[in-house]
Amino acid sequence: MSDFNFSLLCGETGPLTTASRPDMLRLPMEGMTPVLAVGEQVLAGARVAVGNGPDKGDLHAPLAGTILELEPHSMLIEADAGGRTEPVSPCAEGGEPLRRWLKSMGVDVGLMYKAPTLIINAVPPEPGISVYEPLLRDYRKTLQLGLDTVQKVVEPGRMFLVAAKGNQSTAFANCTVVHVTPVYPNGLDPLVFKAVLKEEVLPGSRPDKATILSVKDLYAVGRVMETGRPVTETPMTIGGQNLLVRVGTPVGFLAVEAGARLQPGDRAVLGGPLRGLAAVNLEQGVDKDTSGLTLMRQDASLETTDNFCLGCGACERHCPARIMPGMISRCAEFKQFQRAEAYHIHSCMECGLCGYWCTARRPLLQYIRLAKYELALLAGAHAPTGPTDEELKERTGDSQC
Image (cartoon, rainbow, N blue to C red; front, top):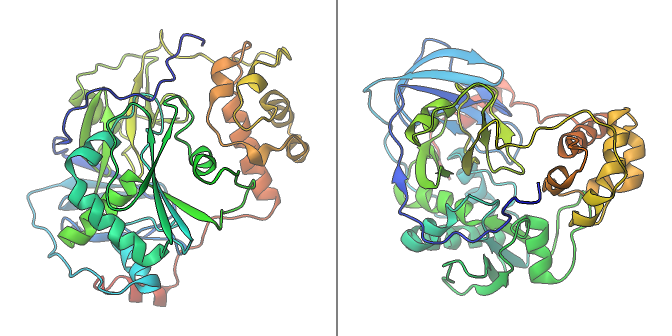
């Protein structure tokens, strides 16, 4: 798809407005352990599930209502006019106690670890997603509070703000500004890390010289600290509009909000056009980390095929990781997953460029993701288990530092 626009320039962006209130919320439950049952009433802001493992933030109800369904991957809440929980006092400590408190308030804290360098990524993650711009322009006080809070956990010696050259992002606090060329995939974390530190992250490892948080991460932390309420909303770009959307809002509801009429064969993609995941159905709800909803018409989207690889090398020429997506896809296609490691599959940053440039229109990114999943299973990986009954009882009390 050589006519695709890979520019990360946002131009003039409007303010962040609040999306309409849905009647139903379908909260994603991946990696969560529910603490309530079907039929129970919930208040807005009440904890409905705890995150499995030490990094995933707990889940809270954006609206008051009744739990109608509870499935392994989702919780359906019928909203009503009920009340909301009282705000809690922010944690006054730093370090690990603050990290645990933020997790209990719905913040994903996997990237909040001690490091000598803190990098704030203000580069749009994909073409068409511009939500960072209004956050940097209109919510600087919230971002500053978020940055001050994150510093208490990370304890960095220096800080950088990485922005796309030509966008309106400006520095705040004492961050050193680094500009990158406004072309996708320069906003992906491995390339942002390289732009700042002039070195690459080793495949499959967590960089110990720096940690990277997005502008959206700072906003989430800042909102929690200034309101005393948990994370129940996510800033998103939908059809060129920047909206503050309640977690669990159905995709179909947001499509109507954007003025789109989806037809059979169209796709609603959670995220951007290159790395996003197509919604299972229009009832699927958005997650806390969803930054955009891309509506792709059948006649304008890339149709993949099961054609054999032509060996043209187009995917290799455009790969920012300098690997061989075509060979990796062949390994995945024929279940030679371990052989894919010889072609450096773990260096793949899943940018999706290979699939857009593939002459044969093969689903290269999907093959690579499949191979990574199967390799993780072969290595004995498993999802973090939920808390024990005693841990669950301890963690479902009041959110205290």
